[in-house]
Image (cartoon, rainbow, N blue to C red; front, side, top):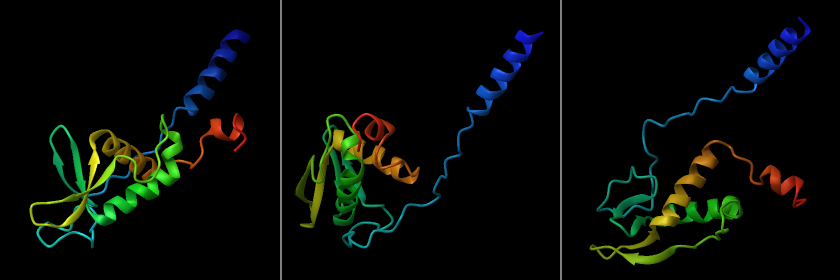
Length: 132
């Protein structure tokens, strides 16, 4: 009987720890004031993909990437810094934009999700092991 109660208690405690929050899903993209006139400004800083190479960002999209890299870059292995994977880019209209490599575009998306989920700037490992 004692073993049965222990099993029920442990199962109840473990089941309570399995609750995960619901993700908030945006229904629209955010507006980007730095978008050139030739593009829809409802783009969240991302203009288009270049297949197999990367993506094209607006000026504000690049600023957002840099901000996220400054916050979360050390949580990616190897760590990234603001500006990593980005180069200046002129589109067919002559607009000054930014090109971001495919890998760094994936990092950008990950860091954006972490930011939306309010992920801590430093991980538990940083706090406990590294003492940061």
